[in-house]
Image 1 (tube, rainbow, N blue to C red):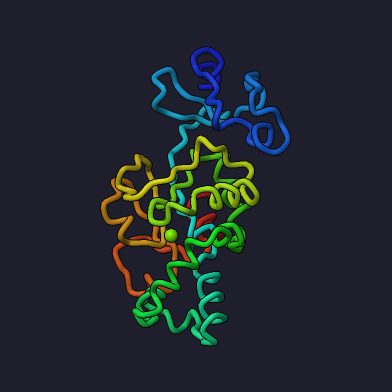
Image 2 (image 1 turned 180 degrees about the vertical axis):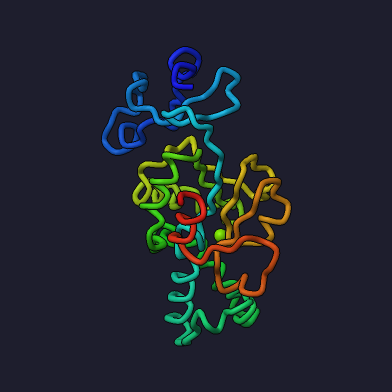
Length: 229
Ligand SMILES: [Mg+2]
């Protein structure tokens, strides 16, 4: 297989040594052949790692999977209204379900504020595991950013800051994730998994507590175990 790579495979610029592309290297550098860790076959359809093993494609959601958006949302709400809603109060519910409708506009305004998506905490171990995943899978970040169109730039800055090894070409801003073509989608939202054509992996979150029918992962250590052990 290695000889196939030498002869017939060409480097996929977006998936090359990401440090070279995004952490101080020259993004215009076209001499990627020595640092590439993803290769395309001549059809352009299939990706392989350096040892010639075909790489399957994983899409990963951002909010509640990589980024603790709920934590920030709760923090702002509790501070603003002097409340003490906890994650335990949200089992099987969205924050919107426990907050009275007359306060929904404020909940919405937090999401639309300039800095909301930029200050989110990173889910523990997600950076290390995603970096490892990237060596063995073709990893795309797929966020339903269209739900909050004002979030585009803050989300991009957050990814660049915390996940500089993910190239911009592998970040997908979308709405309905059934448009994605991948083998796996890791997402906390069952609505997004329902119409996804590959295998949906449900990332545990308070709101999806009662959801059945998907493989569930509780944290990034379980993602690592599922895909890399
Ligand atoms: Mg999500």
